[in-house]
Amino acid sequence: MSTIAQNIEFLRKQLPNHVRLVAVSKFNPAESVMEAYRVGQRVFGESQAQELVPKAQLLPKDIEWHFIGHLQTNKVKYIIPYVSLIHAVDSLKLVQEINKQALQQHRIMDCLVQIRIAQEETKYGMTLEESASMLHYISVNNFTAIRICGVMGLATDTEDQNQVTKEFQYLTYCFHTLKNTFFQTSLYFSEISMGMTHDYPLAIEQGSTLIRVGSGIFGERVY
Image (tube, rainbow, N blue to C red):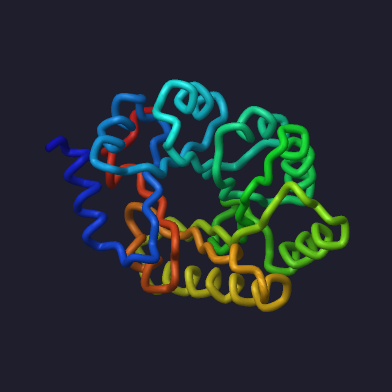
């Protein structure tokens, strides 16, 4: 069994039934994706349109592609045909473009609202208040080609586990606040995407349903 396969098996044994593994395949070749695919991994995460599209065209069609990076509006039209979930919706402008492109391509695009939980200027994301304002705008304007399925967040890159735990707790609080305000009767609003290679156990403890693991599966990335 390859190292990639062993890493996936190790992760699977740790995950509760309600938590899905997103294998972050960005900067890794199609051959590495196939190693994971051969042991049953079907959900993969990419962060650049120019890398996702050729992989999606080349690799098996039952792969569920997630776009996990910061998404520029001019890239939306390229990824809509291929992705199942966009993790990082962080502006009203992006929502408008996703809805526009999904309408044109006859799709309903599942998305997560990225909420800024980290104490780092380099991390993207909206405040809880901005997220609520955006969701109100979506409902009032009847955006029919976009479906908000939950929230996503990136914790601070720190060794302080207490800080990371608090940030994950806050994202879970945001999830429940938005659900109670906008999605009380919507079964599809159910995802909390948080936790990566170095902090996913804490994320799971705080309610994550999607963990995004890259180096923990494929090894350290070569840029």
